[in-house]
Length: 390
Ligand code: HEM
Image (cartoon, rainbow, N blue to C red; front, side, top):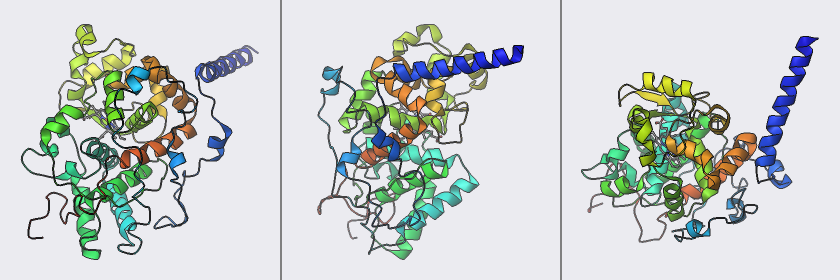
């Protein structure tokens, strides 16, 4: 009897908690989004599917954007987005010129991830770093003195060898046809799926850039100790909004961080307000664990402490209920009123997370793409621009 009473109590408390989360979210998921969770499986005609076209511009609206009032016009409107949506890309771009392109990318990504599953998050991050500096133009892959890849912020980037191997294979089949930036975009999608995330269609036709400057990466790329205002402004400059910021931060549901990225607050808790860390709400046990785990800057720790290998919405649940967000920027997403309601919604409903992540990744993949006839080139080797005699 006693156990029945206590079980009922637990159930009631849980229901109450869910209700509170649901009620405190300013967003009620419209029915149309619930029934449109369409990309959750790889479509049967995975490659070059002409009918599988779900990228109407309206689809790029954030799931929250219609319901959330613009409470912070000064910040949201400060910078005009550099791009909104580039419709010169197409999912059928290589349909005739390189029909096996997507299957080659997918096969290689799955092979590499089967050997080393830590490569899935690394490929996803590599794509973000590419798109955030000079747009998605494979500038992060250029490997010369003073290039983005040589920047301190790029020190822990990985996955270059995967892209090189894919490129070599594709050059054999379709020489001088497929850009490195398209390969990286497709690889990031396939890596997400390999980690358990949902499939989305990718549009192609990006050209590769000719310029890559370490200092630009250094000044643009976030390192995990920025304020939410900094992050909102960075995303706005890329044409991405607050919904995108929160959903894409959900990529931290997989992968790891070097301890070097968190040591500035881990061993400096009292002065951490200097870094915009007003929110110090972190589980004390987790904090102790990190202090033991992160003795050396070169050590690594999982970004999602509960399900680090699964692409799910545990990252958001961890921020709210367990107080075990690893990066201070992750924790700030929940403590800042501009973003906390989105964190709550994505924690509450995983299908909304998958849907918004897909939309936001498509937007990320469209940032400042080079598509004009005189813009960029198709590199033959992703590490170097083509020689002038090419
Ligand atoms: C919102 C601002 C962001 C900040 C402040 C941030 C910061 C970081 C930091 C500090 C790390 C660890 C780096 C290290 O090892 O030293 C990291 C890892 C990672 N980030 Fe982000 N990030 C952000 C956005 C994104 C976005 C938009 C994506 C992808 C869509 C992403 C995907 C990842 C992944 C998957 C990892 C793990 C990489 C691995 O395991 O190799 N991040 N991020």
